[in-house]
Length: 243
Length: 258
Image (cartoon, rainbow over all chains, first blue to last red):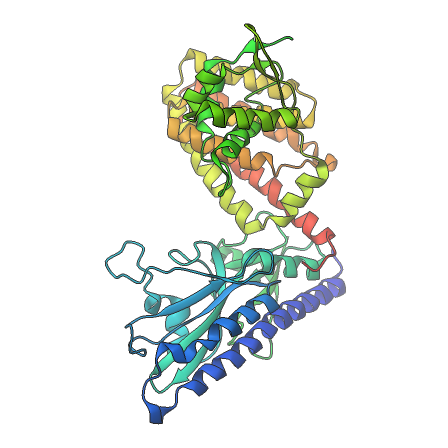
């Protein structure tokens, strides 16, 4: 029999650690989104791409500031919103030794096998449809950075449409936050995404990226929302499992 | 000095390691890496004599000058010795042993997700290899597998046993008569070799691994493809779970906030 009070305390501590680190990233990304919305002045017609040139520097600073958690960030413009191209995506990945983030190439050619049609990807589609911030994933970003990631997304509404700013969280970094806060091997604790996807766990049999099915859900003992303040933005929960 | 000419099989395995090296290395460094990996995996062992420079360079598809650079790097590390003259040539002289600290750090800095992903690939490779081996392994292949299972059981040294374990997995792919599966298996085992770290408290898990090897071997011997595939998959999953459990423990123990 494990100590219930100690488990509860560990759950609270872990929820707080995750919610405050991810929350800090969301807050900064929302500030950048506000500057994007501010550029688009309805009186002057659709801004050209150069009007958003400041983003390169701002996002680089953002990536470096949050390098303990994120590996990249960028902006996906609303379709047909820029005069230069129907679709446009600008994404950067953090460099290893704190240098300048590198540009990530996406294949925007519809004829290509590797065509990255971001308008159909969940992270873009759901953020622009809902018009509110959301954490999407974990999912394997094929054609993007090809690894299993979580994308934090924030909308930047403009008269030309809703652009989406996002940043990529790797499961590896998030797992570190989870385990170091948890400090518990028993009982089994799992960090679950909204669809039942396992984000992290302290049990080797329940690996990140696997899916919790109905049968696993029956074993759930306790459930704690990670972010009680804004569950829509961060719809994750910590659950303990019966042995 | 004591030495024996490298077997064709070992040379073939060495050649299959091409492509496992990290990106961004020059050709000479790639070849050094390939040979170092082969030593790490026990494909090349102390006393093995490499073919003459011209033969080896031709097999590796590089110029003799590039090969000499690779060999010089290995010599500096004390991994090979080269003598001149008619009976001269390069002989493997060292074994690479990553320290416990190196292995622990590498395993801690990995993520459950990347280990699971590696394990998924490993399960796919090993279960298909075992399935094919059940119908394709000849008497000689089976004898070689038997020998490796036996050697794994008899080897007391933890690291040496780990190398024999890798050899067994690769040998199953060889018995499947598939060079692509063998190559994939080798590269995967090479990667696992840099992560495996044994915790003394879990030494009894050794028995489980031995039983699983025996089950794979028996299924291949009796030509039961489904059983061979299932046994290999189970074995692969057990190893992955073991690695993830160690990784979780090491991460929780580390106090640094990344």
